[in-house]
Length: 351
Ligand SMILES: NC(=O)c1ccc[n+]([C@@H]2O[C@H](COP(=O)([O-])OP(=O)(O)OC[C@H]3O[C@@H](n4cnc5c(N)ncnc54)[C@H](OP(=O)(O)O)[C@@H]3O)[C@@H](O)[C@H]2O)c1
Image 1 (cartoon, rainbow, N blue to C red):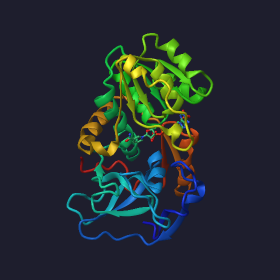
Image 2 (cartoon, rainbow, N blue to C red; image 1 turned 45 degrees about the vertical axis):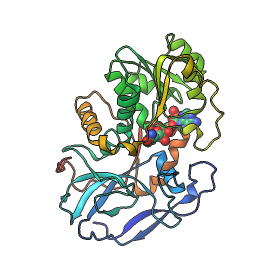
Image 3 (cartoon, rainbow, N blue to C red; image 1 turned 180 degrees about the vertical axis):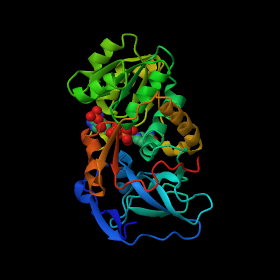
Image 4 (cartoon, rainbow, N blue to C red; image 1 turned 180 degrees about the horizontal axis):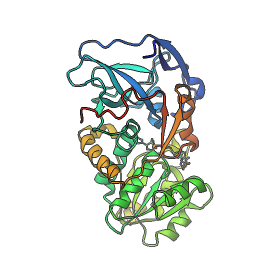
């Protein structure tokens, strides 16, 4: 065990208009490794998850998360191992995920900093998968499609942010349901990965192609399900091409988090085509996490979902990794590996 605990902290208040933090907001400090009290566990973090939410959390998310004051620990998704336990629910060696301090070590009483129960990974599951397919990323893709998109065999499903963390999983789930899947992503390399590696039927490179025209050409009978991660002009182009009875799932809107995007022009297509648009917030679905993780784990083990991971190495890499997503620097799930797994291959005590 290291004898110090490195921690990422909010070093400066953000001056950006949007939710994105500047590099100067990320600072570090070291301290002692915390000692678990009665009912608590000590977790050795192995991976951090980079999510747009990390930024929003520091600035505060109306009615959801209080802002994190300057000087306090940065928070985000973590996957790690229990290395000391004074809790009846957790044993040393358990693989856990949650939203906690971005530090080498953190103590937890079983409830993370979002108020959600720490999640144990299924036996044999990889820690990285715990943050990607089996964590918030995969669960958002699963819930958005199961509850709102409801893709049917033969339907056309379009996914934006398709080469990102949630997008790669959402497209593959739609394919599992027998839909034809079209991914919208930035750049030829990401589009090639979607077709060659993940078997998306078609792709649109929004940085080099006219999205509305391409959607009209690729979806002559309209888009049955649009799973949206980016919002803005791409959502507007999808609205223009929505099918009768189409469903639009609002997962996120990253194009508008930092930059002002024009208002929607084509929202009346919802009325003209009898289509629906609905959003969901991950933390409203805590009661479904176990179901989602179990199904995603089964698909992963059966080889029906391929996991796309983008792993930055080392504790110091976390700030730059967290900033990459806004510039499209990541392909698949952006993680930071900060340590070796202290109990590799050891089965967790289960869900
Ligand atoms: N509803 C919920 O509860 C919930 C939970 C978690 C996340 N989310 C949201 O889900 C979305 C996806 O999250 P994620 O973690 O999977 O992130 P991600 O897709 O791995 O990363 C973001 C991607 O968005 C794309 N992007 C960035 N700026 C863009 C722009 N202006 N126009 C079009 N694309 C742009 C980039 O890919 P390109 O290279 O293709 O541009 C980038 O790689 C985000 O909007 C996030 O806020 C929602």
